[in-house]
Image (tube, rainbow, N blue to C red; front, side, top):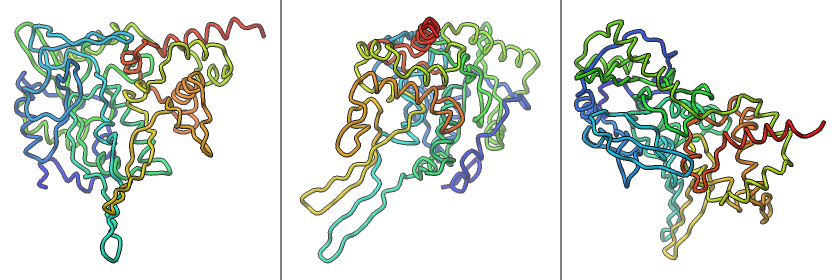
Length: 395
């Protein structure tokens, strides 16, 4: 594969995604930026993944042209509520995050690990490793950049390395977008993960619409990003351009209405494992696994073996969820038999035990679990309620 912007086949994970977010060399590109950028990426061998409209939702998917982007579309989100609609303009990124995250591409929901075929005299073993496709992720938001950093820590930097994820991640290119719209379920600001992108990108774009002028302020975060920016027609950003770009992020942050309570979630959760709130939540929770399926940091999986009558055996890895009854099976019996215990496990792992394992929270404040929970359970409200009720208990 001939790379236009460096050799991704030999790249180390993170090599092309380290930046402190400082504006070193900002350029301004006219509103047709993506009409030239996306073909450029495809011709360089990347499979471009970007937001697109699919079955009424704005989701990440493979696209072939800038026309596939949801230009002029936005979304409206709330607990157990989502709808997309035409906003009546030509804005490229005037919406919040959808249900699909980047882990669907870097760590697919279903992956074949091994195939064994029986021949006349012996067995043939084939390791069906992940193809290691080179993805160019376009339109990535700050919360998803934070989620990528968490997934890297779990799947690349931990004791047990995920070879498929590592291969795909090392070849990936990240073109991020600073949010201009605050979703009603977003709480990234309170988690310190957004709405402005601060690290983990090759390029970051801020969309500006000023009167009749439609432009993008573009900053490079890596050498690979600088190479791409240099190949595009642009002008140097003026002080007013940089100020206007910063104002977009500031206005978005001020518009965020949801927040994680400012409490010590580790102590709060681990000190209240037998609190009555878990049974109350269980009366509403369907154990449907939606929250774990849309969460950009969840990483649990299960291994399954299949055989057929023709002498072929296959080993696959599939996403799993701590809300599944069989997830905690030990010696043929589940440890967490109740919905209350499974919800408690999910939230305490995400907001408490994750610190023990990986040194950070497992939540990036994207709000997907709130929007896509069928009954509208809000993780921020439950933490607030637990904190309030725990303080009312006499010592």
